Length: 311
Image 1 (cartoon, rainbow, N blue to C red):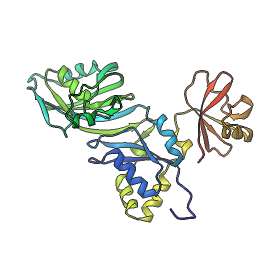
Image 2 (tube, rainbow, N blue to C red; image 1 turned 90 degrees about the vertical axis):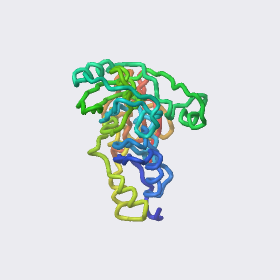
Image 3 (spheres, rainbow, N blue to C red; image 1 turned 90 degrees about the horizontal axis):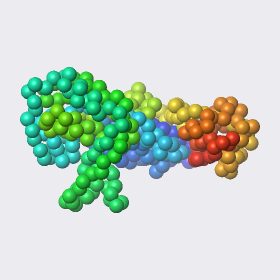
Image 4 (cartoon, one colour; image 1 turned 180 degrees about the vertical axis):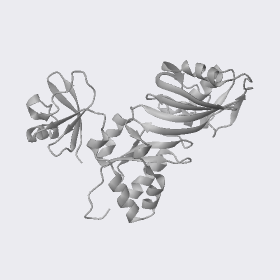
């Protein structure tokens, strides 16, 4: 990083290409912006494409909170064969004939059973850890792995099309949901086997593809293109702007001092926004220049600091 250049801080939304892991994009952005402080909110499998939210500098402190946001996907499930990974990259482990009488209406009725809070068994090839070891590592060791069942939430599941043995879906789901598992389970409910063959994340929390930069911009900057690097820095969302859906309060100079020293904020320190509702979750604390300085939560008559931001 040039000596006269300030360290980058913010959130960058990238349209992840197929064949790259989320960690690959983290590594590429680190080299592109010449900083080690980069992380991501919500893994995308290498086969998947679409919205990947990356935090840079102080933006990495927001990732824990952003990773729990709802996600929306466009997906295609292929009927007739189940694979070891539950997607197109795995080996076929089971096959079954696709019912000849299958219709869009029958598929939609079956899909309706997966809306709401459901119990889902995660894929055996996944990052879920058992006794501190990721399941995908256990599978590669040759261990007989039984993935855990977990309660997950599907807000909406729309069947867009039935094309021969392929089903196009739009899925709006909560944290921890596996679309790969949905492909398996939906196929089983239709009397056959299935796996996921296409997955594109079109929204993560408040971020959509409209916010995303193309992966080519990261690659160009990584290779030393200074124009591409400047473009990436310009596309970094300010921390306060990245928390679009989070209630915000602004504090005076004394409030800033309290935040820096980790003290809870009283109502007289708040100049706008007022005390958030009792029991509300995350609150963004801004200084008088509208810069994010902390994440907080109301406790009684005070706003307690959960995480200071020092960008």
